[in-house]
Image 1: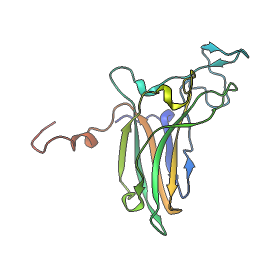
Image 2: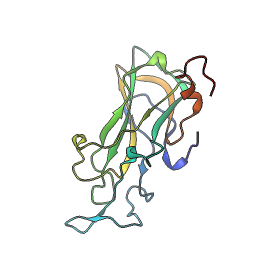
Image 3: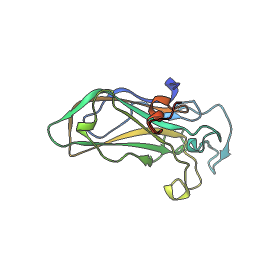
Image 4: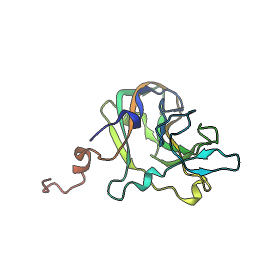
Length: 179
Protein backbone atom coordinates (compact mmCIF):
# COMPACT_ATOMS: atom_id res chain seq x y z
CA UNK A 1 0.00 0.00 0.00
CA UNK A 2 1.26 3.47 -0.84
CA UNK A 3 0.86 6.14 1.82
CA UNK A 4 0.91 9.86 1.04
CA UNK A 5 1.37 12.47 3.77
CA UNK A 6 -1.12 14.77 1.99
CA UNK A 7 -3.95 12.31 2.66
CA UNK A 8 -2.84 11.19 6.13
CA UNK A 9 -5.62 12.44 8.38
CA UNK A 10 -4.12 11.32 11.71
CA UNK A 11 -0.62 10.27 12.70
CA UNK A 12 -0.57 8.34 15.99
CA UNK A 13 -3.26 10.71 17.26
CA UNK A 14 -4.17 10.28 20.93
CA UNK A 15 -7.95 10.05 21.27
CA UNK A 16 -9.58 10.01 24.71
CA UNK A 17 -12.86 11.80 23.91
CA UNK A 18 -14.73 12.53 20.67
CA UNK A 19 -12.33 14.44 18.41
CA UNK A 20 -11.70 15.33 14.77
CA UNK A 21 -8.53 14.20 13.02
CA UNK A 22 -5.53 16.47 13.40
CA UNK A 23 -5.26 16.86 9.62
CA UNK A 24 -7.78 17.84 6.93
CA UNK A 25 -7.52 16.75 3.29
CA UNK A 26 -8.24 19.63 0.91
CA UNK A 27 -8.89 18.25 -2.59
CA UNK A 28 -7.43 21.43 -4.13
CA UNK A 29 -4.13 21.07 -2.28
CA UNK A 30 -4.27 24.71 -1.15
CA UNK A 31 -5.14 24.02 2.48
CA UNK A 32 -7.87 25.48 4.66
CA UNK A 33 -7.94 29.27 4.51
CA UNK A 34 -6.07 29.44 1.19
CA UNK A 35 -7.57 30.15 -2.21
CA UNK A 36 -6.94 27.29 -4.66
CA UNK A 37 -4.78 27.93 -7.69
CA UNK A 38 -7.50 26.80 -10.11
CA UNK A 39 -10.89 27.88 -11.34
CA UNK A 40 -14.36 26.51 -10.87
CA UNK A 41 -17.97 27.60 -10.55
CA UNK A 42 -18.72 31.10 -9.34
CA UNK A 43 -21.12 32.08 -6.58
CA UNK A 44 -23.20 35.24 -6.50
CA UNK A 45 -20.45 36.89 -4.42
CA UNK A 46 -17.84 35.95 -7.02
CA UNK A 47 -16.08 33.40 -4.79
CA UNK A 48 -14.74 30.31 -6.50
CA UNK A 49 -16.08 27.13 -4.89
CA UNK A 50 -14.31 23.93 -5.85
CA UNK A 51 -15.00 20.42 -4.64
CA UNK A 52 -14.60 16.82 -5.68
CA UNK A 53 -16.28 13.53 -4.86
CA UNK A 54 -13.29 11.32 -3.96
CA UNK A 55 -15.63 8.34 -3.54
CA UNK A 56 -16.14 8.26 -7.31
CA UNK A 57 -12.49 7.24 -7.70
CA UNK A 58 -10.92 7.21 -11.12
CA UNK A 59 -13.04 4.40 -12.53
CA UNK A 60 -10.44 1.79 -11.58
CA UNK A 61 -9.29 2.46 -8.03
CA UNK A 62 -11.86 3.37 -5.40
CA UNK A 63 -10.34 5.26 -2.45
CA UNK A 64 -10.56 3.65 0.97
CA UNK A 65 -10.06 4.91 4.49
CA UNK A 66 -7.41 2.78 6.21
CA UNK A 67 -6.94 2.98 9.97
CA UNK A 68 -4.39 1.41 12.27
CA UNK A 69 -4.19 1.39 16.09
CA UNK A 70 -0.65 2.36 17.12
CA UNK A 71 -1.07 2.15 20.90
CA UNK A 72 -3.68 -0.03 22.60
CA UNK A 73 -6.76 1.88 23.75
CA UNK A 74 -7.85 1.59 27.37
CA UNK A 75 -10.86 2.88 29.27
CA UNK A 76 -12.28 2.69 32.75
CA UNK A 77 -15.42 1.03 31.42
CA UNK A 78 -16.99 -0.27 28.23
CA UNK A 79 -16.00 2.59 25.92
CA UNK A 80 -16.45 2.34 22.14
CA UNK A 81 -15.06 4.23 19.15
CA UNK A 82 -16.85 4.87 15.88
CA UNK A 83 -14.61 6.03 13.03
CA UNK A 84 -16.46 8.49 10.79
CA UNK A 85 -15.27 9.93 7.48
CA UNK A 86 -16.68 13.43 7.14
CA UNK A 87 -16.69 15.92 4.27
CA UNK A 88 -17.49 19.63 3.98
CA UNK A 89 -17.91 22.05 1.09
CA UNK A 90 -16.00 25.33 0.89
CA UNK A 91 -17.86 27.93 2.98
CA UNK A 92 -17.08 30.70 0.47
CA UNK A 93 -14.03 31.87 2.44
CA UNK A 94 -11.74 28.94 1.56
CA UNK A 95 -12.50 27.18 4.85
CA UNK A 96 -14.65 24.13 5.63
CA UNK A 97 -18.40 24.59 5.84
CA UNK A 98 -20.51 22.16 7.86
CA UNK A 99 -19.06 18.66 8.01
CA UNK A 100 -21.35 15.74 7.10
CA UNK A 101 -20.60 12.10 7.96
CA UNK A 102 -20.51 10.18 4.69
CA UNK A 103 -19.52 6.74 6.03
CA UNK A 104 -18.64 5.23 9.39
CA UNK A 105 -17.75 2.01 11.16
CA UNK A 106 -19.97 0.44 13.74
CA UNK A 107 -19.13 1.07 17.39
CA UNK A 108 -15.80 -0.71 18.04
CA UNK A 109 -15.42 -1.93 21.65
CA UNK A 110 -12.28 -0.79 23.48
CA UNK A 111 -11.25 -4.45 23.85
CA UNK A 112 -10.90 -4.64 20.03
CA UNK A 113 -8.72 -1.52 19.77
CA UNK A 114 -5.36 -3.19 20.46
CA UNK A 115 -2.01 -2.19 18.99
CA UNK A 116 -1.64 -3.43 15.43
CA UNK A 117 -5.38 -3.72 14.82
CA UNK A 118 -6.36 -2.18 11.50
CA UNK A 119 -9.38 -1.83 9.28
CA UNK A 120 -10.57 -0.12 6.15
CA UNK A 121 -13.70 0.73 4.25
CA UNK A 122 -14.51 2.08 0.80
CA UNK A 123 -15.31 5.75 0.53
CA UNK A 124 -18.75 5.96 -1.08
CA UNK A 125 -19.80 8.35 -3.80
CA UNK A 126 -21.60 11.46 -2.60
CA UNK A 127 -25.37 11.06 -2.92
CA UNK A 128 -27.98 13.86 -3.07
CA UNK A 129 -29.44 12.85 0.31
CA UNK A 130 -26.18 13.53 2.19
CA UNK A 131 -26.97 17.22 2.57
CA UNK A 132 -24.39 18.91 0.36
CA UNK A 133 -26.95 20.36 -2.06
CA UNK A 134 -25.20 21.29 -5.31
CA UNK A 135 -21.84 21.93 -3.66
CA UNK A 136 -19.22 19.19 -3.77
CA UNK A 137 -17.00 18.55 -0.74
CA UNK A 138 -13.61 20.26 -0.75
CA UNK A 139 -12.48 19.16 2.71
CA UNK A 140 -12.33 15.66 4.24
CA UNK A 141 -11.52 14.63 7.81
CA UNK A 142 -12.06 11.77 10.24
CA UNK A 143 -14.14 12.13 13.39
CA UNK A 144 -13.48 9.70 16.24
CA UNK A 145 -16.78 9.33 18.10
CA UNK A 146 -16.24 8.01 21.65
CA UNK A 147 -19.26 6.59 23.47
CA UNK A 148 -19.52 5.30 27.03
CA UNK A 149 -16.08 6.86 27.49
CA UNK A 150 -13.75 8.38 28.02
CA UNK A 151 -10.79 6.43 26.77
CA UNK A 152 -7.78 6.70 29.09
CA UNK A 153 -5.08 5.94 26.49
CA UNK A 154 -4.60 4.95 22.86
CA UNK A 155 -3.41 6.32 19.51
CA UNK A 156 -4.61 5.82 15.94
CA UNK A 157 -3.39 6.64 12.43
CA UNK A 158 -5.74 7.06 9.44
CA UNK A 159 -5.02 7.49 5.74
CA UNK A 160 -6.95 7.75 2.51
CA UNK A 161 -5.47 5.11 0.21
CA UNK A 162 -5.97 3.94 -3.36
CA UNK A 163 -4.15 0.62 -3.16
CA UNK A 164 -5.12 -1.13 0.07
CA UNK A 165 -2.69 -3.71 1.34
CA UNK A 166 -3.13 -7.09 -0.25
CA UNK A 167 -2.43 -8.58 3.16
CA UNK A 168 -5.75 -7.27 4.42
CA UNK A 169 -7.55 -8.45 1.27
CA UNK A 170 -6.12 -11.99 1.11
CA UNK A 171 -7.94 -13.10 4.24
CA UNK A 172 -11.17 -12.87 2.20
CA UNK A 173 -10.11 -15.66 -0.17
CA UNK A 174 -10.86 -19.34 0.49
CA UNK A 175 -8.01 -21.05 2.33
CA UNK A 176 -6.95 -23.05 -0.76
CA UNK A 177 -6.51 -19.94 -2.93
CA UNK A 178 -3.00 -18.68 -3.69
CA UNK A 179 -2.62 -15.05 -4.72
